[in-house]
Length: 250
Image 1 (cartoon, helix red, strand yellow):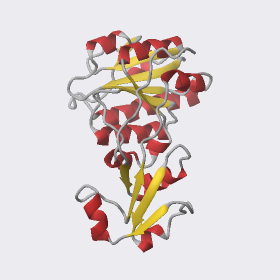
Image 2 (image 1 turned 60 degrees about the horizontal axis):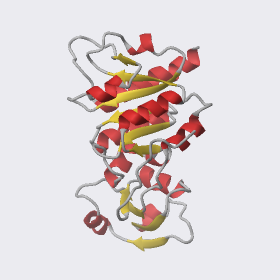
Image 3 (image 1 turned 60 degrees about the vertical axis):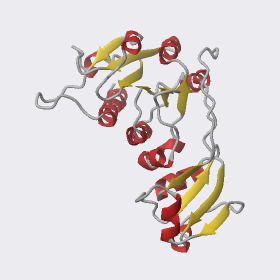
């Protein structure tokens, strides 16, 4: 498949990850370059550390000074580089025959939400998440902690133009469903049997008009009338679950 929509090269300095799940997953990821780990002797003794990784033994107060205040570090902080960029075309080539869903996020900017979405994507075997380079959070310790290790598992593709990316996703054989609370049809009624790209908009604004226009169908999650909407990470989890169970029931 031609590389029509260039992914964005990640730039910037090193990152600090904290918490057991984020640190263990980063250490286990062969694509993640790790520089140094700081932690208490008790916490680091529970990890399988690479022999060439620099180790700095620190007390809890020291760790609290190198990461955001009150971050739940669980006695360990890992210095890493951002993951290498991923091309949309390469991801689609690898996912083409597996039928796994793709999750497309339109201007979802909260790192806690994106981290939680990555966690759901890993739980329900999504092929990747796709975001625009702008109006999406960078990799960070906060996002990695919220993802609970899934940042190292689920490919994250950043693109310049989301509408063009959706065109390329359609060319790869995906049925693009935009999730919109005002849609007349429910998700279950429009899924069909195709490979799915689930497109989620930001809370409040929802899908932008141009992004919605590049979807094959718009759908909503059925819910009780006393609740108007869900947090985007909760909605993504439910939509991925619906797709996951559809494939196993048919």
